[in-house]
Image (tube, rainbow, N blue to C red; front, side, top):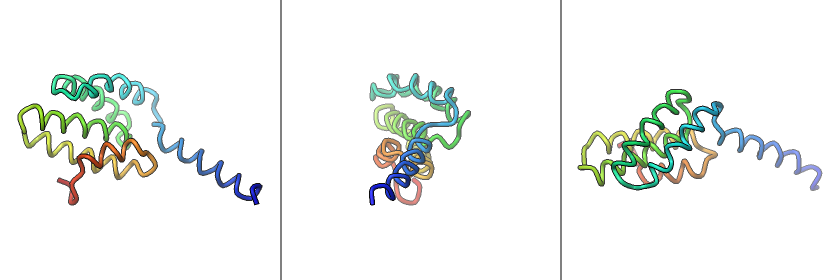
Length: 121
């Protein structure tokens, strides 16, 4: 029984890891560089981290985790930076993309779930 299950588990784990890791290490590096700024939960940090996330998404548009953190950063700018509708809309758009592309990425889905509004906005 175990021998029959093991190959399926191995394939599933390989696929899960493949889904989470971006194809581009440059995109991954940009995301890592943005995190310390985004995690400040302050508008200045979000403003500093967003260009790095935008660069990561320019390299890899389907990078769910970068979309999730971009949603977080735009939400920070919306809540703590003046309640500008542009940031609320961008947070919702990135949250939707994180959900669309991140079916196997729990962190991307968690970040998106905080900001996602059914219907896209």
